[in-house]
Image 1: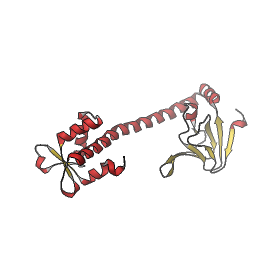
Image 2: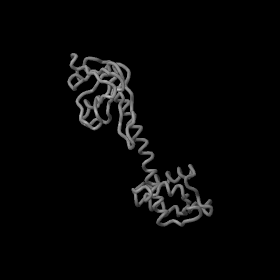
Image 3: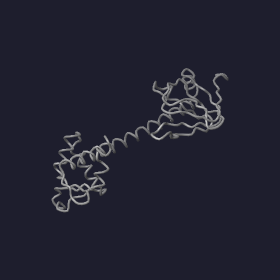
Image 4: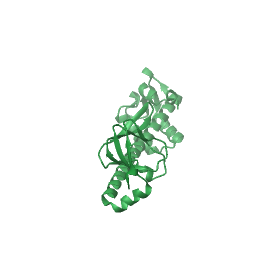
Length: 213
């Protein structure tokens, strides 16, 4: 690799842009780069790369998907641009570099697994809460302070039927809501466990109509 592969950027210069197709990764020789991703109200900085020999943009050489973030120089920055064949040659010739790539990808997979675990844990709970609220609004008995009283077995059957959640998952979610005091047993059902009370706060938080979904 010659000097043609070395690129200089001034503060604020865009090295690559989120959403575009890339065929290069970059090794930092000096300076600092922010990796940014678009969010609802602007941009968020995912990571600052400021340690020489650290690299970024490597996923462009490992899959065909568009860039998942933008890279912007935050000070005068020098990078080494690496294309696919050069990247493969570096991995084959340099065991330390190959190990570093493996560690980066492993960390990425771990983060993805954590995100998937979070989704698996929260998504069914949110869906069940919304379905419980739907049932309460259609078939519950309004009581004091905006709360709604519901029959437990009827509500469980409704949730199971409408979103296909397994009954044991519905029961576990109800238990968690009770434990967290998001909902409560109706005073008349303290022993029989026949009816629950969904407080106004629970209804408002999970009412599909108020969330326009």
